[in-house]
Length: 423
Image (cartoon, rainbow, N blue to C red; front, side, top):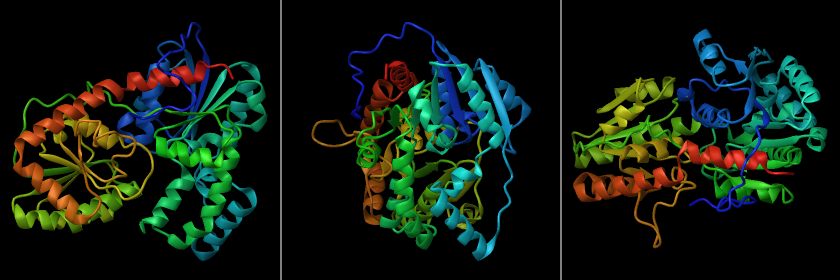
């Protein structure tokens, strides 16, 4: 079980008053199936809105519909939606130099500046001025730019860090999965300074795993940290009624996410062919929205299906023999792992794919099989293909873990305790 720093959840705080909470999310968090950031933001918002007055400030991306906006509005007391700015910068080598120079002198990464809206900042400034004593949350660290340092003196400021930007960049370099290693080596010390600086603006810092907590505590030793993992909506991922057997593999996730792209290419090009040598009828379903060319080309391989967005990820999971989560980069707890475990699908995953989860070891029942190298994946998958009793055991133990520790109700309750605690 993930350990929590700074909050004793065994003696819960009783929240006896409604709070005014301003939630900042430049990423539009509806529908929650849009990606991992949206899933976490929406489900925490949904829980808090049952007892507290939520104002959500967000940005509208091009694929957000009017129906999405109205659906999200029904969950909050107030919704402020700003258009996503279409920033056109210099391209080519000069553009890269310009963006790095701005990062060097301003101290803020280009992706954070890209999402910055002066109009949204002015709206947030006015709200804070008129709501003394409220709580403001930055949902994902990219929203920290809207929180002014002196606000910490007059209201509670919380940053909900989905994953450390410095830690993620460093891990990409260490694992040789960086898309642009030269750029990342230059930016790494700047990211460390940036993360150290913005953490100092907040009364509370929330992370999803112990590993992220250790990483960030090293950067901000004086920070008040709490570990609140992700959860699963159990109704959306019901436990499957039976074992389908066969030799059907699945990977789920947003297919425009770089760590996911790396994972599916590794699985399809390096692991799957060796599994198919043993089990020629093995298939692999790559299930997730927005597959780009690097993912689409994988459907040319024998047995590989690229689905794009689907109405129900749970149905695809329940029809599969094994879910493989071969993440080689990306910090934080993985929703895809939690969802597969909730659905009762046996999981084979890397250390990254299992981050934050107690799934093996002498003191816990076996809940998933761990693999990090190609031969380990082949052996673990083969073992599950052959052993129905092992599949059933992993399925039951994994579902039990999710039910007791990884629901959104549990995560929301813990988040509420953090927001309500006196500074």
